[in-house]
Length: 282
Image 1 (spheres, helix red, strand yellow):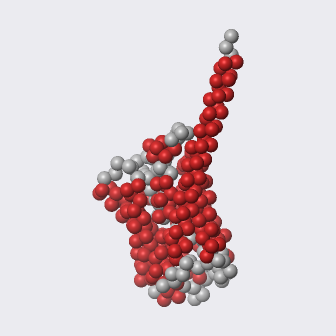
Image 2 (cartoon, one colour):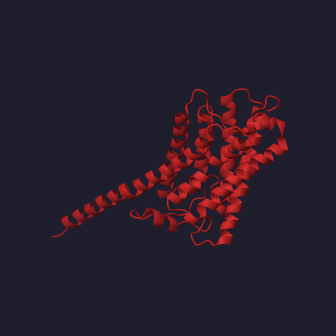
Image 3 (tube, helix red, strand yellow):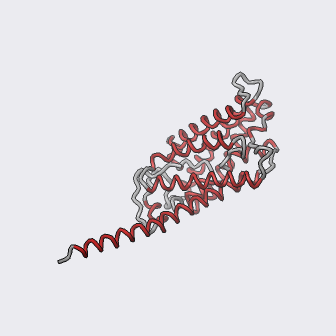
């Protein structure tokens, strides 16, 4: 997600004021239909790249016939996480990423809309483009790698056998909720330039830490294509729904913090200033 370059947010109206400061590199609420189609097409292309690389990395790192095979699952996921996080940050900061906003994740699109940073009428086109890119990228990887990729389920994510669906759902949703609270605070405090790096770091950590447990997806587009094309659709609904709900929850929590707690802080400052002004009167 490409952040605004400069941000000044009045405390009392977060959704409206944040939308006003989104620069020309992100999606304007005044975009026309052709511009929306172009930006959605960019999201499709970038998500295709993400899935092609994801399946490719899994093919080389987890196929026991590969010269790059890593037998230890934890070590393999650490490598996959580092590559995935770096790729994601690079794509967000690329010219194409700046063109579309670099969401690459339906949960991100819904969350930035909930935060007031994205027009509602663009949510569905973006989400459809991202999910289509998931299928396209996975299909392209299958065409290139064939049996080695198919043998690994085209990189479809699987939770640990000891983890219940409820635990997986909680981990996927909770990770996205925490991430978006952190991102909201970064933007609010004028550190928006750190957002792409924070996203990349978070994705890498989630893959490395939660990968052996919940699967570490936090992106519906990451799981849809591999699961559908490999036929491994068990618990697919969790990986489609949990990140979206988690991101939306994180956005709501940030808006509450920003509006309610910020307003209370401003009220205290105002009353303190009035008290000081009164104390200086003769």
